[in-house]
Picture 1: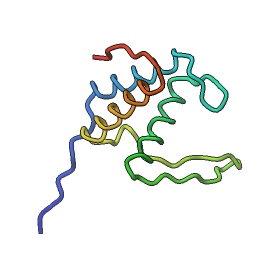
Picture 2: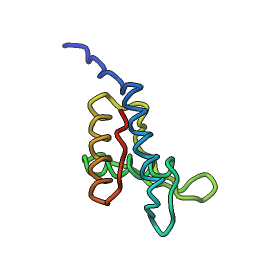
Picture 3: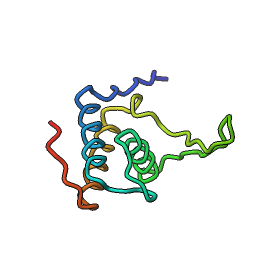
Length: 105
């Protein structure tokens, strides 16, 4: 029986690109749930949407103080391949929503 080799984790470049995309979406003035959102909030929304779109489960639980908390995958532990998919999803979502994004490379 072979030993599973872990996939390489996302690169610093992928991390920078995704965060730049989140920043562009936040700066666009696009609202979600009636409010403009910060880049950090867009990051959470996009990771959750990407997970759902690609068939991963997310769990919403009652938090320690009675708040709703989504337990979702972490972008920091994504593989290079998964991070590429997240970036592609984010670009497609932005384009479909009329958001101009700068070339994050």
